[in-house]
Length: 230
Image 1 (cartoon, rainbow, N blue to C red):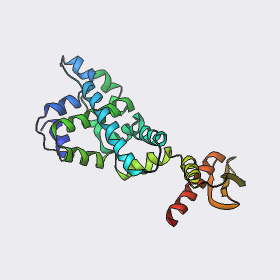
Image 2: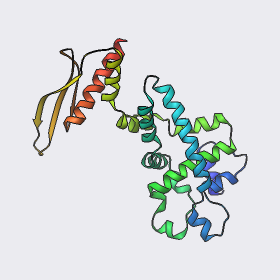
Image 3: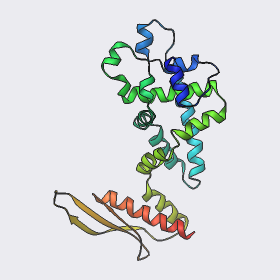
Image 4: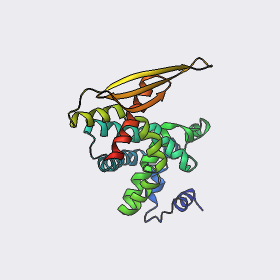
């Protein structure tokens, strides 16, 4: 059984044309050494565009009240190199990449740049070879999995900006973040406690290793309370 067959079996894909997958998994170092006409670079280009479109559509539906600036920030967090590389590691894509001798010796199958490229190229191969349903299932298992959304989207989410937008829509007074405690720890670090205060009332409380982080947590806490009451 060829390595392509192992990949297709692992991801439950019945190929219509295996050439797309051979191309998607072929690094330029391998194609140069073996005098092959194609490698994954063209598919990577197409895959990048597909992911941009699919992630944009996903976020547009997920956050109906967020403006284009916030949506762009969220999308960037998901489609960036480190995120795609982490997804590739999680699903074990590295072992399927066809690399040249030099890249094998330098462990190219562990490099973020190559792993992210291979995710894009394989996404494009599935797009070309399969129907929309299969492509969407692939994305649901990978880039739209709970792991990715919770792990990476939450990091980029600007809760303070979202809360500020919500307050401006409701014509409320100025939101303030008040530091109520700074607890010194034994390892020379600190924990800050911050309240999100509006109209003299505490709407949310958060903790963090610095004021900025604590403010974000306070805004997140306030937003969760507001959404529950709606």
